[in-house]
Length: 247
Ligand SMILES: NC(=O)c1ccc[n+]([C@@H]2O[C@H](COP(=O)([O-])OP(=O)(O)OC[C@H]3O[C@@H](n4cnc5c(N)ncnc54)[C@H](OP(=O)(O)O)[C@@H]3O)[C@@H](O)[C@H]2O)c1
Image 1 (cartoon, protein in one colour):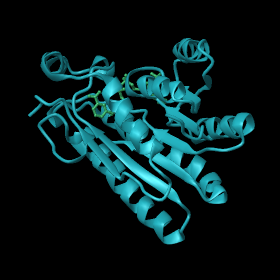
Image 2 (cartoon, rainbow, N blue to C red):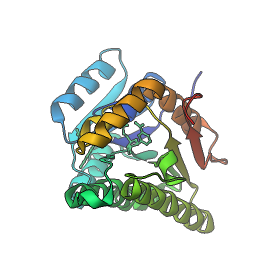
Image 3 (cartoon, rainbow, N blue to C red):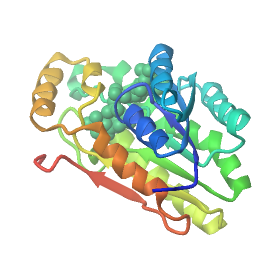
């Protein structure tokens, strides 16, 4: 299969869905620009991608810091001269019930899952407007569509990502900018996500659930590849994918 090589920026590329997507898209001939906080992991991932002749670069990025996110966009432009796809993927899911009062976790989710996405849009949209082409891939969740005890703040941030994405889609369609918007809403996927749950009761329950149901991040990467490689006159606006056995 041959496709035009696109310049693709991914936040949260140091593990899980971001890492799997970076590796697959690079293998298919796209040029990757990776951001996350763990520089050593990014170095290993880019080394692994580049060892077979594919192209990737990275920068340490904290998506809660607008300047840091902007620097990732600047790196893509400096190295490759354009940004075809920006994947807002960085996120975390420290579930807990409200009575536990884990305010720091609530704030981290709002900062990373919501502000991080807005900062990504802010950093790449002007370039895409100039190019008259581009695509945002915003990672939400099945939790954008439903909520369960302990998941109130996470679902709120992911529903927010969904709403932000739909408004962006409508604005860009009205502007005739050819900027596509794709929301990716996965179910349980085996990544490091559950490692960062701080509430012991939630962590135990979620580990058991993920052990039973979770499927691989490569499945999400394959779905993202099809949204990226679709001809520019058509957009997949949302991908909802779950392990088949997940209720
Ligand atoms: N796994 C699932 O079941 C599932 C289901 C639905 C949606 N999702 C969503 O999928 C996305 C990716 O998560 P994952 O499952 O692949 O989990 P993961 O393996 O924990 O990956 C999360 C990524 O986000 C990065 N990150 C966290 N805080 C950051 C910050 N402040 N600045 C920059 N990067 C940051 C992490 O890198 P550093 O620590 O190196 O910064 C890591 O690369 C998230 O938005 C998550 O909500 C996951």
